[in-house]
Image (tube, rainbow over all chains, first blue to last red; front, top):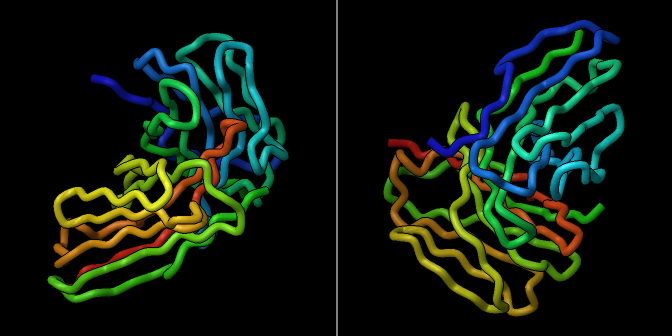
Length: 113
Length: 110
């Protein structure tokens, strides 16, 4: 089944403790991206990647890192999480550039205390 | 960054009533995509509009792209309880960034 898999679904952590949210897709998509969803703000893009070893900042990249060492994986790294990064995170992928629909993972709800 | 405004933020309708959500941008949109997110779920792609003035229909859903490509709308005729969720528009610029609207949360009262 074609899908985008995110893990974990729920994560509670403390300020400053490094964490990684994994994202994997099995559709051979070139484009992958991360979003955070907050009430009243919609979905905001954190980082995106056009292909292996190619990543770029989205609208809200501060406090996040990503890597794209393999085509199928695009992990989101929070080196030193802070409470303002408490949010619902989505990974998404698509075949190509702007005209392709995004396929979203099931989301990761992160709470930083 | 680019801002895509969406109104209303919330809408409660009686089952059978119509519903419309509007997406507006101060700049010209490259193309517009619409997504639906069920409560507790993830956004799911509905449709993409590319041409100025384009109108597309999916059963009871009608999507429209403005002539100036600065606005778009989604209209649902005779809402059903299965239409419940949050509807997002999204613009993707030539730099491969996606800008989502703030979303409209639809509640359908049986």
